[in-house]
Amino acid sequence: MNSFDTLGLGAKALAAVDALGYETPTPVQERAIPLVLEGHDIIAAAKTGTGKTAAFSLPILDKLGHAGYGNGPLALVVTPTRELAMQIDEVCRTIAKRTKHRVTCLVGGVSYEPQIQRLEKGCDIVISTPGRLIDLMNQGAANLDQVETLVLDEADRMLDMGFLPDVRKIVKGCPEKRQTLLFSATIDASIEKNMASLLTDPTYVEVDHKGETADLIDQYRIDVDHRSKQNLLHALLNEKGGCRIIVFARTRYRVDACVRKLRRAGFNVLPIHSDRTQNQRKRAIDAFAADEVDILVATDVLARGIDIAKVNYVVNFDLPTQAEDYVHRIGRTGRAGERGFAVSFVTPDNAQEIREIEKLIGYEIPYMSIEWNGSEESDDALVARANRKAARKDPEIAEVVREEKARTKREAKKREAIATEWVGEGKSRRPRRKSKPSVDEAQAAADPKRVKQNAPKKRRTRVKAKPDNVEELMASAAERHSKHADDASSPAHESDAKEKGRKRAAIRPRKTRGTASKENKRNQRQAGAAKPARKKERTGKRAASQNGFDGDFRPGRSQRRDSRNRH
Image (cartoon, rainbow, N blue to C red; front, side, top):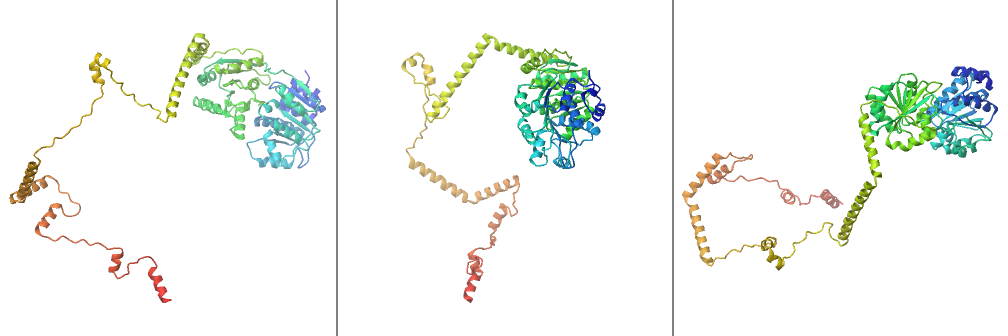
């Protein structure tokens, strides 16, 4: 195997190789570095963890000139994610310490002003994400007229993320006479169709074929019910170790939920996804690299190109939607000649995804067995699901299901027709109560009792009899009335009434409302006391006339009249 001394690098670049810790070049470095030094456009494909970043950064900075104050950049590296940009920036800064170049990193999630100030002072190489670079170009802060070398890193990922229009705009802003380098984990038809036109007579450097994974990574799968994934993850971490592990989930919500449950179980874990700020994501990666955090739970933003050493194993909590992302996920372990393994949780809903992954990598992923508390419940759920799926394929059961669906459909149509008929006639949707059928003679002869019970009841009305001797009754009533009046006016009746009143007052509590009681008032009237007169304030026209005014109180009336008389 060749060494870096034989690839044509200068003394400063070789000193940077020692600082990076490289001893021998990888296959992609061995083939790409001489071509870049010669000025060729290249399309390079190599599996993750094979040193693609050093394959273009070492030769570019070795031959790159130095821009003056306020000029530059002379080289531009475009990459899809912030994490990749920060990692490339770290490698380039290590090399630039020996070659004396100025490196600037432009990513989103942070303020524009510091980046604009660095661009105004001038720089030699810029590492940027497409979105932030387009923003700065629109503001007039980024000028690409002096770019000599353009690098499109992880080109397949940029196509998947929809960055092709931005990439075309960036390429259009660069000079036509330039060197263009395209690096990707895979080269497929979409790369050749959309990206090959941006290069001039490119040379292909394909070290590994599509779907190949690192040889030092052991892959396993565990079939599990969807609801039991979290319990299985806890059991896996307890059995295989919970230190230096990356867990991949599909969405931001899934990442946050998994982190909360792991923290409740006592694990030291941090999340990484697109909703986290750039500083939060950087602190999480730095803490993981410094062994301050044991577990990272992330979406696919961490799947591409992140070089974190000594990752023990990777867990696919959710399988990716694209099979290529599986290769990049598990590539976070088994790097730099170290062994690692990856475990994928497979639910019945992931049947299509696991088939595509196995087709891509070229072999069937073996099973792993883990002893955990919810294994029996998960197995029962999987068996029940499989039975339901098999039952749906049974012809007899399928026939019964079809008949039941047809019957339900007929009943629904019947109800709808009845409702439409009633609404069309202008009636209520609720039909009237059916009247009792009429009774015929034959039924009456057969069962007279039943007919009598079902017969409608007749309405009974009471009629008061009018007496014949009306005049005699009226005369007797008048006589009783006169007699009662005479008894009430007698002194004996009055004394009896007073006695009853005193007894009633003794029994009942006296009710007063701030004035004399009824009994006191009655006694005063009997004693001949005069009724006190009530004084009422008179208001309105009557009061005004009594006080000597003319009865018109509208504001300003008298004043206006007096003023007219004076004039």
